[in-house]
Each structure stands twice: as C-alpha cells, then as structure tokens.
Image (cartoon, rainbow, N blue to C red; front, side):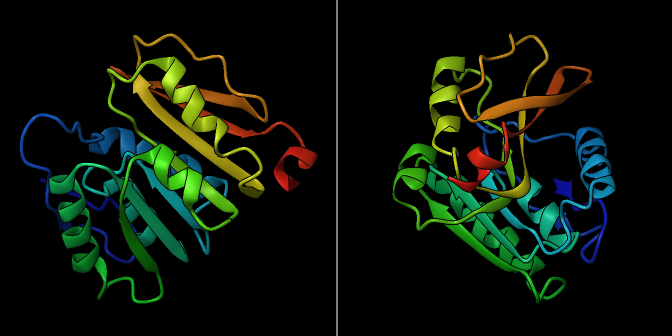
Length: 194
C-alpha cells in the first residue's frame, strides 16, 4: 500500500493496483517531487492532470495539497477502479477538490477532452513505453498548459532523455535512484497561449 505524504489527507493509505503491471512511485520520489512543486506553489488551487494514473497516487497527493481539480486518466479497468476507490477515500479530507477518474487511453483522452489549461500535468507512463510514443502523447499537451504550467515526466533513470516535442522544453531534471524526473514548461508565453 502507498500513502498520501502530506496535506489535508496526509497519512491516508491508498489501495494499490493488483498485479505487477503497474509500478507505483515510491514515497521517497513522491516526497522529493512534491517538495519541489510546493516550493514553486504548484499545487494550491491548481488544475491537475494525472496521465497513466495507475492507483491515482500522484494526482491524489496534489489533491491533498490543495489542488482545485484533479483528473486521473487510466486505461486499464482494474487500475481505473482503484483510482475511483482511492478518490472516494480522499473525498472527506479534500471536499473542495473536484476529482474525476477517466478510463481511457491517454492519447484518446487528450484528443477528445474538453479544452482545459492545466497548471500541473503528471506523466508516469509504463517504463517499457517507447520515447517516440511518449513524445507523441506529450505533443497533445501543446497549448494546453496554463500560465506557468509544469509537466513532470517520470521515467527509469536508464531511459535516454527524449527529444521533447515542439512547444515544450525541459527546465530541470532530478535523479532518485532508479527514477528520473524531467520538468517541462511551455517554450514561451505564445506557446502556452495557443
């Protein structure tokens, strides 16, 4: 089982997705990620999109830390059910956060989702996902970040850095044992405003 690290639901235990197909983000990586995001003021009042959500732990951590809306996108039926159950568990602690679970492929969701400008997009794809496919997926975020919006991509530390799609640029990277986090932003204000 994983848990919410801090915020309104701090310490709350979350269900894990059964089986070995979903790789949860470790508490150590989550702590480092959200310490950085909190220092930048990224969670409070944010519109958060959690892609390849698994159990929903990353998006729900943002909910606990004050996000206004969280959308969890997960294709696998068992994982989407766990997302819904975990969201229901957090509902009492985070009554001001609107949490939605969408069972869909990430590309399918981004291709048909109503237009939103997200403040924070958390992307934790399966490690076997090829970089080319990841970049195609990220290209669907072009023009969909709010001012100052950030995309965080979690990958194996052994994965080569992708050539980021037009409209997004890396501004920071951090390593945590076997995990690497890349932080991306819109290339300029014009890209964010498209």
